[in-house]
Image (tube, rainbow, N blue to C red; front, side, top):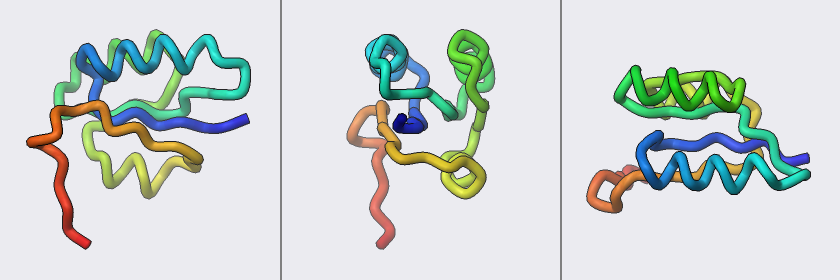
Length: 79
């Protein structure tokens, strides 16, 4: 079983959540979005933890996979 976190609860994140949800070896553990309404709706639907901070999601959730479902222009690099 793989635990998944999804960053971005818009159209891309929602479609991916649907695909993950039907896979027998994947459990959606956490979802994250800066839009509280979107993240609350998606977390309720998949019975997952809701975050508005990706860093908090990473720090507080035991995840095997993190999917970044936001437009590339919002991806950041700081390493």
